[in-house]
Structures are given as C-alpha cells and as structure tokens.
Image (tube, rainbow, N blue to C red; front, side, top):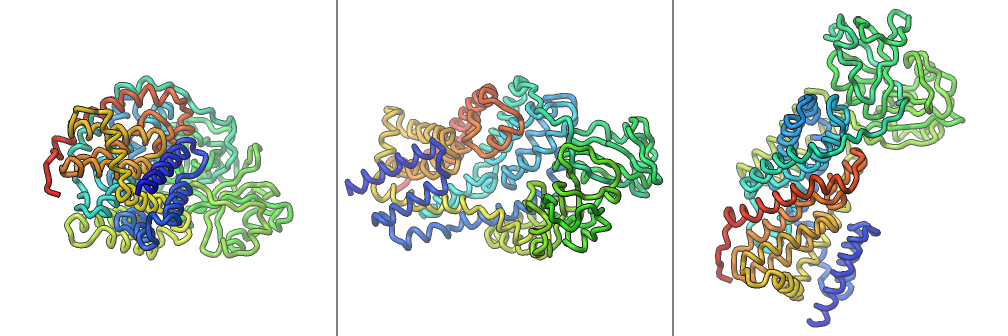
Length: 579
C-alpha cells in the first residue's frame, strides 16, 4: 500500500506539472494516467470502463450535442440586438444578465461563441470593452444551475460515483444568484478600465455577398442611412444594381427600391448580419437549413473556370449554393450572375446532402474545409428548437422523465427535423471531455482507495491549522481555485474532488459544503486567459493582454470568493453525520 501511495502521488505530481506546462493535451494525459494505473493493477478493467458510462457523463454528452441546435437558433442574436446603446454600464448590465441566464440553461462556451460576432458589430463600444465581460458573466451564469457548465455535471458524476445523492438542478441557485448580481456590479464598475483596443480590421474585406430588397420589404422607400446600412461593422455596401444599372459609390441618401440588388463586401461573419435584416432576400437563403457552411477554392483544372455560376450549372452539379465569393484582395463588382469564376477564387457554399459524396469536388476544388460559420435557423425552426429544449428541462425537473432520457429523445427529434445532422454530431462529439472525465473518475477512486486523497487533504489542512472545519472548507476552495487558474476548470475539479470528499469524511460532516467549494472554486477563473475556455475564446477576439485580465479579474475574483465563502456555509451548513 505504501509503494502504491508513493506511485500514485508521483503520477499525480507529474500529471499536474504536465498540465501546467500545457505541452500535451489534457485528454492524452488523463488517458495515459488511467492506462498506467490499469497496467500497474491499481484499478481493474471493469472499474476503469464503468467510469466512462457514468450517468452524469452521458447527460453532459447529450447536453453538449443538443447545444449544437440551440446555438443555431436566433435566441442568441436577439440578445445582441439590445446591446446597441451608448450607455456603457447599461450595456454591461444587459449583457451580463442575459448572458448569465443563457449560460444557466445551455453550455456557456456555446453562448460566448455565438455572441462574439454580435459584440464585434456593436456600434458604440469596442469589442475589447465587452468581450471580457461577456466571458466573465458566462462563467458566473454557469453557477446558477446544474447544467450551467460542464464542470457542474462532472462534479455530479463524482458525487454519483461516490454513492451520494445526486446534486439537484437548483441546489446552488441561491448562491449563484448572489454571485451573478455582485459579479455584474464589479464588472460594471471596473469594466470601464478596459482599454478601447479596437481590433485591426483589414482595409478590404473581400468576400462579396449579394442580397435583394424583397417586394414587401420594410427597407423599400427608405434611404441607405435610415436602414442603417452605413453603420455595419465588417460589412460594407459596395454598389446597387437597379434595372441593369449600377449605382457606385452608394450615397447614404440613396432611396432603396423593391427589387434593388445590393452588393456587400464583408468577411465570413457577415452572413449573420444579413440574416438579422428583415426584408432582405439574400443569395441562397432558401437553401439554408442550419447546416454548417463549406469553404472551397477553385482549382486550375476545374471545368467551371471562366464560367458564371449559371453557365456552370453550379447548384445542380455540386448540390451546393454559393453564398459568397472572394478573389484574393481584388474588389469584385457586379452581381453573382455576371462574375466569371477563376482559378483561386474562394467560394462560401451551402452544401446539400449530396455535396460531400460528390467525387468531383476533389478535382474541381483545391481545398474543401468546414467553415466555423453555421447558418441560423429560421424563426419557426428556432422556436421549435428552443421550445423542445426548455420542455425537456421542464419535464425532467418535474420528475416525469430523467434528464438523460429526455435529452436523448430531444437529440433524435432534432435529427429527424433536420436542424442538426449526423456529420455535425460527429464533428462536435466531445471525445476529449469524455476521456478526461472517464479517466478522472478512475483516478479519484484510486486516490481514495490508496489513501492518497486523505494524505493530500491532511497536508492541505495543515496550511489552515487551527481553523477546524471552516479552515478545511476554505482550503479546499482556494486549492481548487488555484488549480483552475493553473490548469483547466474540468481538470481542477477532477483532482480536487477526492481530496474534498476525504476531508469531509475525516471530519464526519455532510460533504455537500465541500462539494460546493469544488464546484464554485472550479468556476473561479478570472485572472488568467488559460484557466477557462471562454476566457481563451475572447483573448484574441478582443485583442487582449494578460494585464487586462488582471485589472478586471482580480477585483472580480476577490468579490466572488468572498461571496462564495460566506454563502456556502449558510446554505449548506456543516452538519455532523454518522459514518
């Protein structure tokens, strides 16, 4: 047992060091650790494999897959439309409350990913002023419910594996509400310090997009300026085609008419801007059903060289519709019908079901790649997706059906309705998260059985000697927080849980307060861009520096930690239990 304990400690130390260096992916490290444990007979094959079918892990997987459909709905875009206001505190408050709410019912990474583009197009505030508050409020919102963040469900998987009563959906909502409100106040006050560091936008955004003013459009009869077509970020109105004549340059006072064909220059995110405009019928709109877009480059040997889209029968030949065209840094002019395609042209496509099975695409195009841009669902589909998701949560909360079964039925429904595809599910399946959680569950068992968890807990407690149960609780919280900042939130929770659980048992008290310390500690990553995924997502998008995280993250972390340390013992008191 002694040699086993020493071996486990050595392996855990190596695991933490390698995680901090960030040279090897966490999934590989955790898988290697559990594999070595099996080879050394520290865990049986049956025990090791059983951890990968934990109910909470299955729930997490199904929830992340359902989020693929939810993030394509228009609910996240509706949030962005209410953020165009010159009053910074008001914008931050609106952003914070809406983001926190959305993060409480769906994956916070999906919320941040969907809102980054919206915030970049804000007309009054630089992205660097809003993207970090977006990330922080998404983290805060994850503390409101059980499904608010993957960490909550991962900890719940440890709870279930330990034979304890599962964490309830709203068990920590009261604490979360106080955390969110106090956090938004701090962000509103200190967020004004964030630099107005506008990201450098290319002088030319060479993708050409085409849209038509529909017959009954509300935009007809109003000027370009009144329709706010001059106030768009990353999308520029280049010219208007009217009755075969081209209007270029376009005056802000130009009155739009039904049937006008508008030519825009923009980047790949510009498609979302067009989707948000009522009264615009843009090219290939009817073919979009929420599928991911595909970017291709025309090869020199392509048979469509020198032909227009119509002449090449593009849609029929490839089962795909062109959304946008780019030709290096050249400025394209004229409608899609007049542009003769050339080798090297980049096309953004809406693929049909037969596109990827077409053998010609590898001969006609040099490169075929999935774009990060996904088309939004129409309003009817969006309502069905959101209703289905909320209904699934509601019936599971009432106890009519377990959440795992409900999410399974929901994902099958999304597949049958065509709002998500098997290809998307394969691409978005969280293989790395499954590897980390499954392996971490096995490592947790090994830490407890070998006595290493108790040994580490005693060492941690010595730092807070004389503080008793409260000292142990505070030690667990700050230990988890430190691990979160140094490695990742999920890995921190995996390493901290067995220590917290052993400490609670050694004091013969209800482990629930210590479990909550791990949950909230793992969601306390505000000081580093690397500890939490959403922080890293906005790092480049907001053109941030490390000091930006310190200026806003330090006061937020202090307030967050104070609230958590005070609130958890009040909601989950230290109650003695009989072992």
